[in-house]
Each structure stands twice: as structure tokens, then as C-alpha cells.
Image (cartoon, helix red, strand yellow):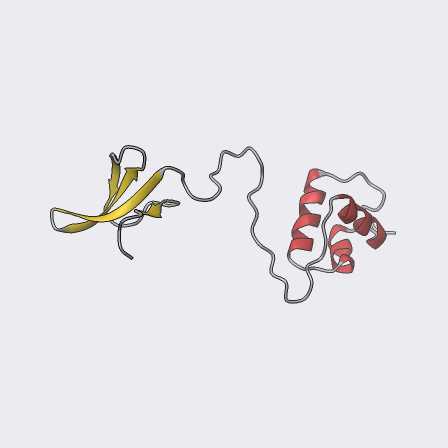
Length: 121
């Protein structure tokens, strides 16, 4: 019997279980890492609806945790365009509703904004 077998699952145990499964570890390897019985690990993984990725299957990143106020996907109703200010290239953020310019950056593009619709390339 392993050290943690039969003990309640802590948040850290669940986090470790999830990370091990996402990384493609087997249930046997995960059970050894968590110091738990393999059947117990399988039951908890099934309860959490976790499955080991198949060979060649890539695990995609997810937008979790819910409620963290992080943006998912593109910013709506805004675009950006490459402009020149005093002869130097800048990126300008634009409101799509009124076409009003909102901000400029000198070196890098704005994250999550699409190119202006009528701008080539």
C-alpha cells in the first residue's frame, strides 16, 4: 500500500494528477508520483474526466481558470493599422464603430487586434 492511498485528495494532489495526465504520463507513473494506488488514480481521473492523450495526439492549451478576467480570442470592435509618425513605423489602435484612433505603439503590434479590414496584406 502506498503512503497516500485512501487519504482524501487535496487541491495540490488534483493539480498534480491533472498535470501528470496532460503531460502524457501513464496511470502507473502518475500513481507512483502521487504515492497512491493505481486503481485509486484511475478512479479519480475518471471522476475528473481526464484521459491520457493517445500517441501522436497533441494537448492544446486551455483558457482556465474561469473568471480570471483574461481575454479569450481577438478583441472585438477594434483593429490596428501600420502607420508612419514622423517618418517612423508605428502601430495605431482604431475603434471600428467610429474609426477613432485610440492609441499608438512604436515597436510592437497590439496583442489580440486584427489588421484593419481595408489595409492590404
